[in-house]
Image (cartoon, rainbow, N blue to C red):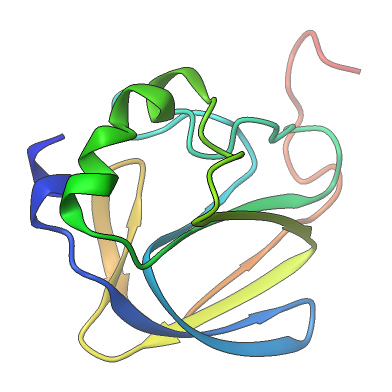
Length: 128
């Protein structure tokens, strides 16, 4: 949580199912499940069985604004905020300067990063 206090907007180059965009954002999260980073519900409607990725973009805002919405991140009720955008896609390519990718709060490497949904790639016990 303290890391969020140091967030500054970054300039991203993204492609969502082949649609290219450039934007400034605090973060772009891509998920198949709804929780990460110690319980934050950053992709609150994500489903591990729907064959799609959920994308949450938190557009550039002040640190004060970002910190004030933290309680909403933990319960997944932040997507109505005017600086939050949610999308769904099968493939997301993310790039930018001086950035690195993270997975569940751990650094996994530099960008560019490609995330693609593959149906039936993982069998989950108890799910159809």
